[in-house]
Image (cartoon, rainbow, N blue to C red; front, side, top):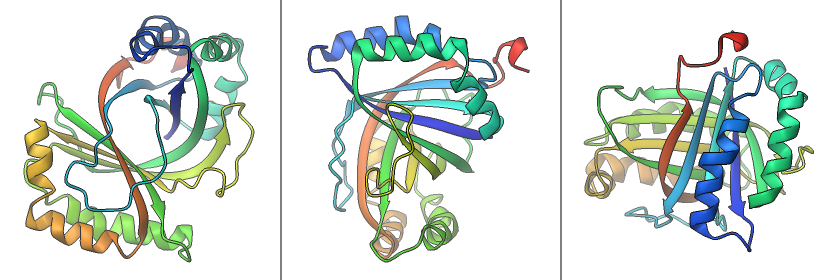
Length: 239
């Protein structure tokens, strides 16, 4: 399975409240009709503080991160060529400005317990250190680093999204220089206090020291997630 993520910035003439409302109430129902769509989440940015991470932050300033899951890249390509997507693209222009698109494969290190209730979600954009290859980045991130972060206290979920493709808001392929994103982190906790405590723990000291070896920038956001199409709820016609 692959996930397509959109890093969304609202149009200057659209307020944060209008952006959030339109994305949920108008855009969401259009996007959930895409053929082959398995899951669809909207992550609305509510806080862009680093919150206890002592690491260089990138220049990203965004209002939301979309996640759309497909069985394969072929299924994703077919969805983006569909009539349903034309309506999505038209509506996108009404409330979203600059957009970066990435395709990723996921490594679920700590699955989220569906019975855990409402959780605080933190997402982070990662850029690898200059001189490292994508393969070296993956080896470090999916190896020692994944194990180190999995030991954080009060951690309720941890997923790594390794970027495999990049494109502009117009759907045209983008170079790494244009979109220097190597990974997207998803972490879940019960509260902001648990986030801050986790990143002040000994496990965090180990993981953050290791991060200095292969990550140049970590740009973090707290998000409020709306599961437009939850797991296992895709349309029968998409099966």
